[in-house]
Amino acid sequence: MQTSPTSRPDSGRGTQPLDERSRGLRKKIVQTFAAGGRGHLGSAFSLVEMLRVLYDHVLTFDPAQPRSPQRDRMILSKGHGCLALYAILADKGFFPETELWRFCKADGILGGHPEFGKVPGVEASTGSLGHGLSMGVGMAMALRLDRNPARVFVIDSDGECDEGSLWEAALSAAKHRLDNLTILLDYNRMQSYSSTSEVLELEPLADKWRAFGFQVREADGHDVPALRTALTPLPFHPGRPGILICHTVKGKGIAYLEGNAKWHHKSNATPEEIAALFAGLEQG
Amino acid sequence: MRKTSLDMVFELAKQDERIVFIGSDLGAGVLDGFKRELPERFFMEGISEAHVVGMAAGLALEGKVVYINTIATFLTRRCFEQIVLDLCLHQAKVRLIGSGGGVVYAPLGPTHEAIEDIGILRTIPGMTILAPADATEMRRLMPQTVDHPGPIYIRLGKGGDPVITNPAEPFRIGKLFLLKEAVDILIITTGTTGRVALDAAALLDNQGLRTGVMHVPTLKPLDSEGLLAAMAPCPVVVTLEEHVTTGGLGSAVAEVLAEAWLPAPKRFKRLGIPDAFPCRYGSQASLLDQWDLTPQGVASQCLTLSQRANV
Image (cartoon, rainbow over the protein chains, first blue to last red):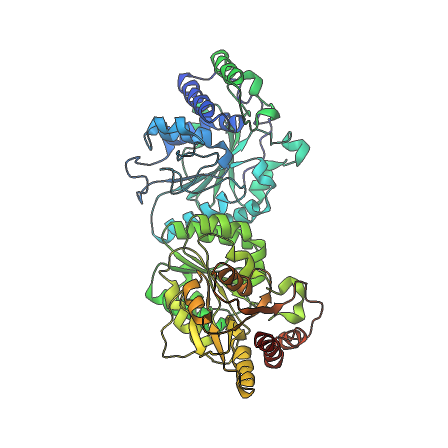
């Protein structure tokens, strides 16, 4: 069993400047947000590097065959972070970029939460928290039954750890020794109302996951090389599900969004607010 | 009925590698043969029903056909959101076998009495709801569940229920079964109350009221046209179910009737469990007796309606 690190693994999280790719993906996210006039911008911004590393370096997939049996499965259980998922899926060619500009429109396929069957590359409809991990456990069990070496990745949020069903799923993943299942936990320490410590304390979070039978790793969730290193090799430990706790900053990339609960979700964004977002991106 | 359904899951699983069974924390020895012969596809997952339904959805999305069994209330009440989102929204081939439909668990009290399961599931798009009348019907029904699209809820009776269905008549999901021809009165029923309906019909026949019984094992999708055709000649229509009168079979038939624009209105009544939690223990039979869901009680209600109809 891995012991708790002596230094706080979240210290200095997200302090490194974002590179061109991370900034470009965030620009796409703001453009998508602007097209719909709404969205969970802060939740999406904390995810960008996690998704980027998965899709650039870890996952096996073919956008031309999004249901290929050989693909790795990636479930965004925190479905409200979908603006980031849509940006990366468009970037990888799962659907044309023009689809982003129909975000939340009546004739679009991209809604405020991602839907299976509508969006190529989306493995499960999520939006209500506490569902994705159970579905991921089921997929991982099916892949094992089929002797399929494909892997399952689930991105959960910290607020999602409030849900009891998530811990039911964690018990089950450990019981079945699902080492083909890896969670990436977006630990930005903010939920809709306020900080996770104020709403419902999760600490000691890494110890909780260890106690539930997971092999735990931690990384700065905005540090691309650190995330790549943390996700290599897989599985983290034979016969054990893994979790990478990604220490992130909600709203990372625009200074006035960072750690700002008011930007958890925004609707009816004004042209001035949208212009300020683009300006904020330039400033970093 | 429960033993037949689970035995059938085992039989079907032996023939079809896609079939997987999940229990929550069932009684000792349940499906031991399945566990012994097909251990890779047998899961006892603990008292974590919400997770079990989500996990089943994940398995189904990978091509498995998943059968879950646990107590009906835990499946339908506790897992409602998982059923809506993980199963119905994904059209996942998961079959929920709910033990103790109605007041089978009368001695255990309201936590275990599935009195509104049909009503709540009937509101979900893409759900299929089955309530067979006896074990022989269950045996004919189960093979039809393997390739049926989307999720299915299968409501179980107590077990040892008298056989009232015709073994020679093939089961098909969505099909209505006329157990007895109607002229004056039609009793529409589902699940195990078919026996009560038939006995009530016999009592009414003795009084010169030619009473028929329509068994509706598929509550959703409901064969509205078939029901309307069956109701057409009868001035009196009564629904009978071991379920609250809000939301179940009676409500479904009332909806059909209300929108049918019939030239002459029916004398119609829903018979079932009143809109209140059961306040007594005892037995399934004693509760049904308390609510007049007995042959005599049903016949009496039908007679009253018939007399009014003849005014």
